Length: 577
Image (cartoon, rainbow, N blue to C red):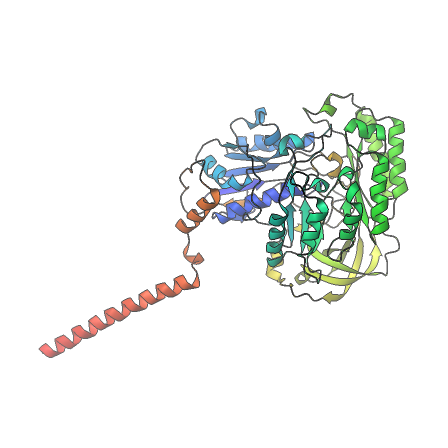
């Protein structure tokens, strides 16, 4: 029986939620077609690599995987931003490709590739459906893409080449998806986007309209929480009060990821960020004033071309002024084909020095002083890698590590903070909050990935919670290695929601027992085809109750008829004697 292995991001790090969501959708479709999820890549008959193109090292790691796959003589499918934005790469010759807006056709590509065909699906005018089959990395967390692409034109960004201009899902389709996942037992909904603040500008709506519509669907007992994704300053300035009102809602985490990238207006201009440091201050000051317990994460790129000592000093002063608990520090990496790649670089030794200096400043902060002894409501959705702690978050999305049974996953509780650390706090559960939506079982928890508490120092990330995705935000991504990401020299502590793995393997899928389905026509609807395949290849263990009753009735009738015939025959023989 054949197997398929999917190699997406090495970890759910640096906020690449959109790529993670794509991986979940692809795995869900393959699973729906009869593939079994496994963790053994050695015997796989096909590898599928899902990539991100935020930084140049991402592509380097992808190249390494492609080489490894070719050396192993395995059929290969590459998905994600890298092939979409750089489809003519030499490394992609002879490789099947799935574009970022073609993930709903991954089964077709896998099937044809297993037959020995090279398939390339890259162009599409419509967005993939939101109700495709999906296998979540964390059954309690739904990563919900609200739009693709962005409106920005950052000079260092490569991802827009891949994901293109802004394309937003309708409010109705997103609300429908929210209703569906809540009914499935999801406890957190993460809005995913290259730039959440730009949502709806292409379809005549805006972010506050969407947020209010989603909040109206959330259970009033706050059993399911909403987390708003990364947003650039320009697109929320006009909606700050409306967004502050949503962030204050009991069912919404008081947390927002707002990248600044530099404390110098000159560098922001060179980056083409379309805002000033003053406007960033307005965003932070307003949200902090209007939202109780507001937590803000930001990003910094050290060593952008043209950055002087004075520019860097302005960045240091900005970070010191706000004393933010989460700062994601990245060194500049040029992406081929971007305007920044043609700019005069700052010497790498200086870039590394500045990165270390900023990290040292940030690590001196003590953001959680004063929390010890407080009682906070927390939402628990993760298992720590040590197998002892569960990971919860406060309303402000501060990470709380507690010792509790795994049956508490997917629940909410009141916890007393017993001690504080640099990257998280520790607590003890003093009361479990009952909700009518609670369905957690131990069996559920065993299917979930384990994650690392922030005390782990083997990875890099100067932050205490994970940011949201950002195609145009090089610095929004944490410094651990993804498919092609290079470890930053700055100190970055891994976040609890990052699945900790010893390698890049995400899923291995055993091929279904039925034969490879015949090649489908380009115009055939993949969802219709899926239903046909399900009906054609259904297994006995998938029959419903009605099916079993009908079969049982047929068997009983058959035996009854044989019994009557035998009785009649016996009577006839007796008469003849």
